[in-house]
Length: 311
Image 1: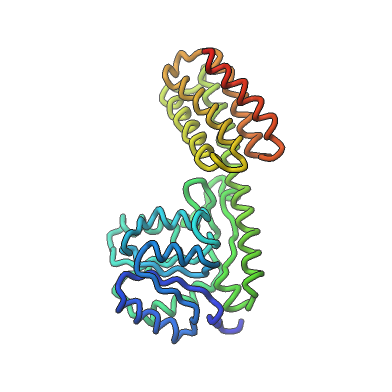
Image 2: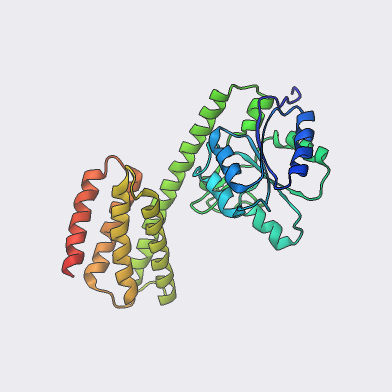
């Protein structure tokens, strides 16, 4: 394999101390990195990531104005920037195990404990060109898989993702081809999240209805109802005021009916319980085929609204 060359690699270096950022920039330049954007606060970092497809983010967790965990998961969910699979290298002086685990849980690829020789920071790029760990794809977490042993269902939740750093530094691919690979992988992520959401709604609804057939405990029922509400609220927040707003509308109906059942979970209104499977089915249909479901979901929403006004 030819040695990597980093002249086409795009890096954002987010470091609050100007003196330290200058030293790190020099070390990166010596390593062959030419496209390095220096940021001293969270706003400028997020703007830099939004400006183009970035391959590596070197970020001090003490950056001014930064909610590190929230920002990293926004990047991983492609709410910020163009590359949710960007290599994220956190720089921090923390050493406590719980603090380290919290950083890892934010979806970072690597953690550099400070203080550190700037030359060693630059040398980390060679390690980042190796094959990546598959990503865990979930609603609340998207990022490198940290599990040492596989679990049931991992085959669905794990995804091989592009390594844009490797593509540019070793494979010498043009940025257009790199962007295409990122877009294809992100389409797969979105599809898996949609299917996961749809399946979760169906499973939770079956468990709720099972309680009224004599299965499960009251605690389990209340837990599943809370999860259903959370699923609905997630759909509402993601689809409200978008071209798929009908998904938010049917999810809102499902959430309202679920909240009504929550008021008296062991003795709900029979009509509310009967509505549950129909609402779950309509919600799953709208998530599975958003465009095809517009008219059908619209009719169901109107019927449910009329029912809620009358009851």
